[in-house]
Image 1 (spheres, rainbow, N blue to C red):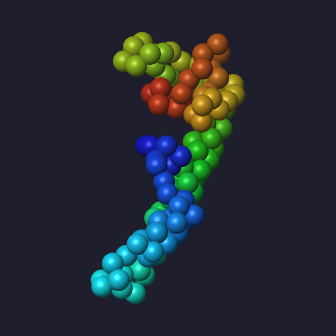
Image 2 (cartoon, rainbow, N blue to C red; image 1 turned 45 degrees about the vertical axis):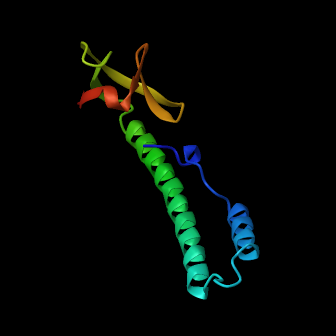
Length: 120
């Protein structure tokens, strides 16, 4: 999933500057209608709402992953050491967050949640 911060966004200030420039430079014989003006404001408000929801969903996903990882502390897991490679087993002794990802501590190994194949 793409990070919200990585998406090019237009700020409210930039939008208002563009809107003012559009109003100042419009054709006086064909001015922008109230409906077009309201439509543009509505579209911008909708975009802001969607961006806010995306941030909330990302935060909720991170929290869910953290809680899921924490629930594995003290449990035995089987995990792949490398993608498609041999598996190992061990007891989860702790967790950390590295680069926004939950990493479980299993002996000397650091195991991401997507490496887990079974939990017992």
